[in-house]
Image (cartoon, rainbow, N blue to C red; front, side, top):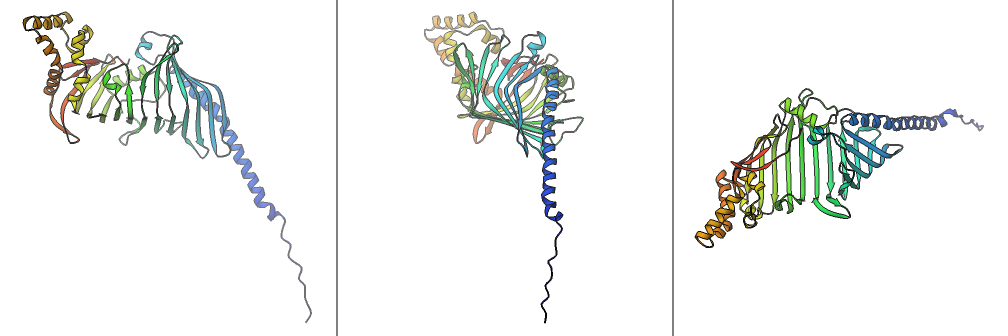
Length: 399
């Protein structure tokens, strides 16, 4: 037999380069797409800023940059600020210099394949300046982040979360604590019952380990809160000042339904539900049904006895007992002491028990989380707050 040698078949060279060339073309196309998307960030941001400025919220950024190639868009804003004009009833009634808030940096991240989801991180601290241009508050936190789904159209849901937030009042070189919490979060979304012509916004607001100074001693003690609401009456989502938005809500018969709320502070637990709307004067109207366990623990913290010892301010009497004069009340205690020495003091010392009995008489017995409780109404009448028949506060107008 003779040996036969077959020449090897030569493969076309173009097959060797097909995949690498295809990858190069795909990479070039993706790069072009990323850089185009990055170029649109400034366009979209400027358009949004222009809309917000018309509504009285002027946003600015000292330096803006875009990074994240190849799969993300990372928009970094250094020296962020917002000036609020005509965002409160007072500003709308009497135009004045804006309130300005500034913070160091905002980082917004979007995946290039899912640009409708934006995630943001905020770098502390932030400062808030009053209309006179002086720093009046400092806001600090450990972490702060938010997410928005649905942009650039109307967002479908949004959230913002703070860990260890703290607010301090600035007076010269002195900073005084005003409020703080271990954790705060706010979530909002369109409810399942919502429709395009009748949107319903569902919100959840939570505070863990919160405290507030300079308002009432009760609020200075740590508390937890969980509030769930449904907001109806919105007609559109175009940017506009908040007083104008509230006025439209009132005209449309809009309201906030407090579906569920719970506040806990030590042995005190309170839950409430009801509906709040706005009167023609822009003040709160509505009623909440409250159930409170441990209300007897609250009475000593109200400082009834100390208030009577120091003398009751007329403003306090006007709030809780309209028509009663301070001099009349002090004369009453003096007359009791003259008639029977020590009687006036005894009445003062038992005032707390009398208030507790009065509050208990407002409602009916109930049980809350295995504890004895009382149920009673909390009413808002054109901004005036009533606990049963007692006037306990006044809420300022929203427009």
